[in-house]
Image (cartoon, rainbow, N blue to C red):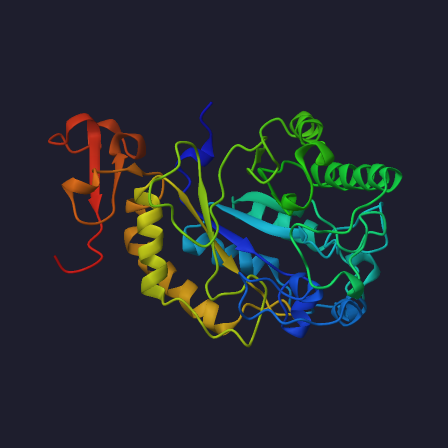
Length: 362
């Protein structure tokens, strides 16, 4: 069954949380960092959670984010409703560990959803299956450091049953309290088996509540699309896929990370992903006050400027020529689908137009 997602080419990822106030990566600093995040520091669990009680982003303006995304040519946005640290940016009845108990009080996720919908963008919600704060998960402590992928603290059967109930209930809240949700973007599944997650039952509940929703492949064996992270596959996957990519080396706001990709590099990446039939989910990481860092804004404005002239070669396209036919990314579009039949250039067979992206001088 084909959907809007088949020809979507550009999405925006938003990684944001209470730890953004400290200029720290989401979740990972509390477990000692991880090899894939070179600028992530190791801080005590207690210190990491210190900012939960002070989260009050007075400059959070999701409408501005929505206009920015629309101006970029973004078709869908994915927002971190709950990361591995267990802190919910939505109002949940399941726990006090949420934005409702912070000085900000208002439901950040609701404000985000309403803003994105107001400009016609599709709405995606990121949700971590892992929860390093919930007592029955069990919660991660200083004694559990260093974080070991193969040797994690294990719950008792009773604890796990309680956690699964809690997790299902929070996902149910997200899918019933906010209208239509287009994408559920899971993460954190490596910590348990598909059987422990009850992945099949969870997918069944999700599709019952939101029949048109798309689920990523990080809900094991249940996904609608693949999610290569921080790279473009050399050979495009056989099915739907999306590359998620940071602008520097960090997902969350990190002022120590100055390793920014250039605007040119990001535009080239977008061209390459589109030419392979994928989507680019480009990440932004707002600061603790809700504003987007100037280095990221600068690059987004450059991309928006490029897209204002060339978006037709990216959006709603399919892969173009074979690599041996042209030294660079190319895309294809049926121009009759996007303009009146009598307006279509007669010399083009079947109404097809090929777009060639010259990323370097031939």
